[in-house]
Amino acid sequence: MKAICYHLQLKQPLLATALLGDPNSAVSFNYVPGSLIRGMLIQRFLSQNPTRDLAGDPLGRRLFFSGQTRYLHAYLMADDARRSLPTPRSFFAAKSLQLSEQQSGLLGRPQTARVYDWSHPDTTFETRRENEAEEKDVLKPLAYPFAVIKGNTLSLYAPQYVVKVHVQRDRVKGRSTTDSGAVFRYEALAPDQFFAGAILVDEDSDAEILCHLLAEEHCWLGRSRSANYGRVRISALEVLSSWREAGGSAPTLPAGESCTLTLLSDTLLRDAEGNPVVAIDDAVLSAYLGLPVVVHTSRSFTDVVIHGGFNRTWQLPLPQSYALAAGSVIAFTPQQAIDSATVERLEQAGLGERRVEGFGRVAFTQQGERILLASLSPSYVERTPPAKLSSLEQRIAQTMFERLLEERINQAILHFVHDQIIISSLGYLPETSQLSRVGVLVRRALHSGDVQSVRTAFARFKPTAARQFERASIENQPLREWIEDLLNTPEKVWNKFHDFKFPQVPGNNQSELVERTKQDQELARRTALRLLAAVLAALEDKRKESVS
Image (cartoon, rainbow, N blue to C red; front, side, top):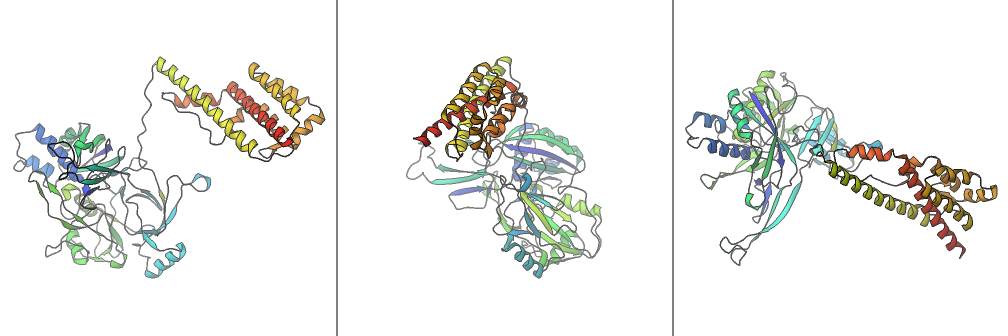
């Protein structure tokens, strides 16, 4: 068995319609269904082999219909570029929990919250009530659809959506009319998001064929492609000889010990009479696993969704059927040991119907942590090196940087003066003559660049004049010490500006340019003198106002 892994970048909003919303709207799945990938590859296969009959061709049936090739759903990519998985429905947290990516706690650690796994064998109705008492709130399943579990930490992910309103147009007149002018809304996956998918191939030779079909970088998926929806870029194509969807290696499940079966995608199961399964029991699970098991219903958490579809060849909808929702967790105890080879075979093949389209994906796990720490993480963002600029472009970028830096310095000085001088209580201010005296020294130094002359002249002030600068204070520091510190260590001037950021301009040496600017002693001295001149001028104005 080989796995073909790939990344999908949404260049436009993607509308993979789910059976949700009102009749005048369409809501997309929060993932890219495997059926879309399969349909796109079928179209490419037929365009390269127009004479083949897929229904009667053994290769076509093996690639697209028999289940020997399975097209897994593409789920949101985590920040470390791994494929996230549906959040287990046995994970419960406080009802009022609202994690934020921007919010951070002590020492810059991300905001976290306790999450309880109620499928754990130690969980009882009493412990559930104790958990709610600890949180002082009702516990509800997590509202974030995707997660990555690492030990006792849980990273949560949620895709972004974009909502657009459209008006139906008459095909002949090209505009809306009384008879053809319905208003409808599309809620689609937002562009510039990354999803990770995989294709499982039983015949190793088929992997090369599918890689050739995936080689074309751009494709179109989903609905309303003529309305600027559905453009996708395929990247990071990789063929792996050994791959497990849940990560790690397949476990061995001892007899008589509790373990869990987690559904990694919606699963279509049927009981012995052919009816769709909405509540899994011992008989159904034993029949699908091929060995006797006991299901613990009190520690199993499942949900039901409705799935349908549309056959574009027949131009007819597919039958709708109930399915167990992705993330459902079934706690069970096997009556006989299940070795790792059997577990690996079941996970690779999946359970139930429509497995070729990504349904029926499962993962077997042993005892895990009962309490986890969860945090909301940003999804993957492509980090590409900046383009190489020509010498002329670099000079233009340098000029842009200098002008933007000058503007930000001016704004930072204005904000400092407003916050620390105009609206602050500074104590007894020096006489206007003394402030003007220092201001003249600073302005001369701005022209000559000689900070030493200001330090020397200021140090020679007579005790009577020097004491006037000790009675006023700025930033909880006597004015005299504040001026001396600024003149002695002008490179610390950047720390006095709240949230000061150096400008970002195009270029392949952006970080080098910023670092060089930070180390520029001449710029630091000039900025420190400009700040001091602005502070002295504001102090003069404030002194005159207080006297008048």
